[in-house]
Image: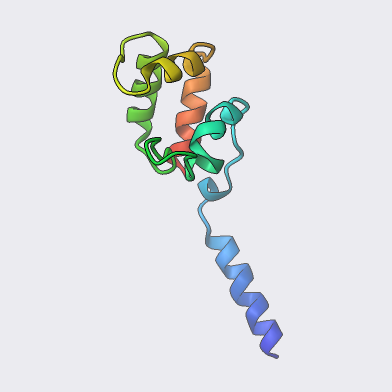
Length: 101
């Protein structure tokens, strides 16, 4: 009886999870993961920001600014090199993914 109740609780919890919680990572996510960690939630250095849960519009703006050489402070050189090969569609996909984490 107890196992049956526990199964129902677990299945109910899974059923009500937002779809964004299980969103599939975009193809270029591995590039970001190398510094910002899995799902953008575990940066490899304290100075690197968490991307998980960040505002989508901010992420799009920041990544495009790095890619286009408009942002010059902090880790701009590293970020510019990483973002250089990203298309607008790549950036949108990454921003969608990280903002939903």
